[in-house]
Amino acid sequence: MTTYLVDDVIALFDGLFADRFNTRLVLGGDEPLYLPASESCPFHQVIFARGYFASALHEVSHWCIAGARRRGLEDYGYWYLPDGRNAEQQVAFEAAEVAPQALEMLFAQACGRAFHVSVDNLGDVEIDRMAFQHRVEAQAQCYESEGLPRRATAFRAALAAYYRQGIGLSEAIDSGRAALIQRKTCRLCD
Image 1 (cartoon, rainbow, N blue to C red):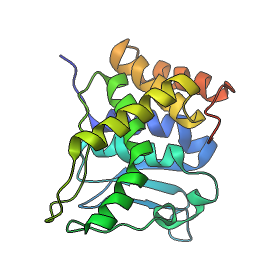
Image 2: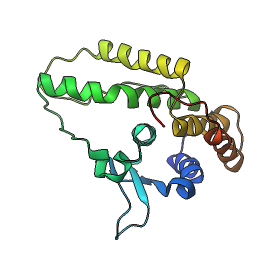
Image 3: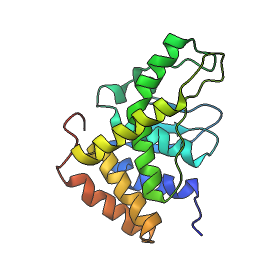
């Protein structure tokens, strides 16, 4: 039985990206957040919520999609509305979440874990969870056929090496680093 510890995901992420991108994966509180380096913290922080394994994978997927300009902005410059979004706000939320949840799905598969889409809205708006899930699955398939962003490719390789192949953390990080320097990437992002 595989044990899924957030400390291992943190070690894999930091081993791959701390030096090259000055970015670390950080266990946070109630809400996830991305903070660029500042006077108070010399490195960028991908902060995931409450120590949840799935939250760590999800927040990493946002970071893997964000370009250099967005990585210089708090929370990548995106808006976030909590539960209770109206129908129009929910449509915008889902549109922004398709790509990161598709990567999260691929990361979960690399770990041998189940993935569940998140519509993240407990308000009164009727939500078609299955339609959203189909859009996420279609995007994941697109990534599979056209290529993942380079950082996502590296992280996925490290996760698969560690969780699926049983390779130690150091070797799994090396596996991810090898994927990081390969140039076959998604045509849409880096």
